[in-house]
Length: 441
Image 1: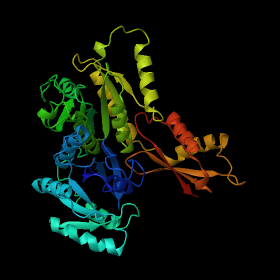
Image 2 (image 1 turned 45 degrees about the vertical axis):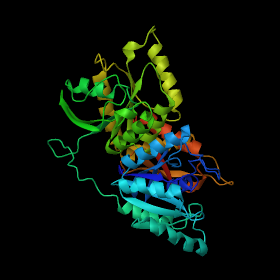
Image 3 (image 1 turned 90 degrees about the horizontal axis):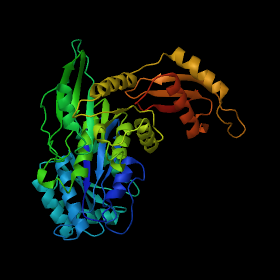
C-alpha cells in the first residue's frame, strides 16, 4: 500500500467529483450540475496497474469570496495542496480559462508540489481544439479527459502512478533482519495519542498539551521494552497551530491516512467521554479498507463517572453496533494518563499483528470449511446446484481466501459473509479484515 496522496482541486463545477468517482471506480462523491455541491472532503483509495494511492476530492476553490462556506473550502484547498504528493488541477474546456482558474493556477505555482493540469469535458474533436487554450497556463503536464465517459483517464492515471516511487526510508528490523511490526496510533485530535506514546516509552518523546493539534508531524518511535520490539507511529492532528479551531478534522484525517499506509496495525484511540463518533467510524472504515489490523482503545476511561458492573460491556456493545458489519475487533479500556491497561493494549496489538500474518494450512482449511459448506450449501442458481469443492488461502498481506466453485458468480454476498464468519469462528482473525473471493473450479 503506497502512502502516495493525490488531491483534486479546481473551481466549482468543473467535474472534480466526477473525476474522483472515475478514479475510484465507484459513485462515492455526489455529482450535480449545480456548482458548490461538494463542501466536505471525500477520501478514497485508487488502484491502477497494481499501484495503490489515496485520492482527496476538495470543494470548489473561489478566491476572495466572503461566503462562509467558500471561505472554509478555500482554506481546506490550501491544506490539501500542502499535504498531497501530487495535485490534479481540473479545468473545464466548455467555459475556457476563467479568472478563478487563473487564481487557482497562481496558488499552485507557489507550491513546490508537482501539478498535472486536467482539461475536463473534452467529449469531441471540437472541444479538443478549444482545450489547447489551457496550455497558456504554463503547466508542463496537461491531459484532456472526459470524466463522464472515461476518455483520456487511462493516460492520466499512467502519469499519476509514474510519480509514485518506493520509499527510500530504512526500515527498522529485528536482530534477524525481519521488518518490525508498525503500530499507528490514530484518532481525532486531543484523544490522547501523544500521551499514550509517552506513557508507553516512559519518557516525554512528544509534546503533550490540552490544545488539540499540538503534534506537528508524524513521529516514529522504536519500542524495545519487556521483551517486545516494534515501531510506534504517533500521528499529527494538525500542522499549523493558528488553524487549530478551523481545520482540525481535515488535518487529522489526512495525517491518519498517511499513518495507516505505513502501519500494520492501527490503534484507534477514542475519547471515552465523547464515545465513538461518526469521524471515528470514518477513520476505522479507512483502516479496514486498507487491510490494516485494528485495535480500539477507549482512552480517558478514568474520567467516566458512575461506572456500574456492566458499564464497559455495554459501552463495547454500543461501539460494535456502530462498526457493523465488521465487529470482530478488540476493545480495550485504558487511561493513558494513569497508564491503566496500556500495555494490555500493546499485547492485543501484537496479537492482531500475528493474526494479520497468519497462514492456514490448505489441508486444515479444507477439512473444516468443506464440512461447514456441506452442512449449509449455497443456494441453487437457475436450477443448478452450486458446489464449492476447494478452499485456499491466497498469499497476500491481508488474510484472503479463494473458494473454488462450479458457479462462482452465483454465490451471493450474504453467503460470502457466512463463509467469513465460519473462518473467524474456527481461526482467530480478531481485529483483521478477511477477504473472500469466489473462483471458477
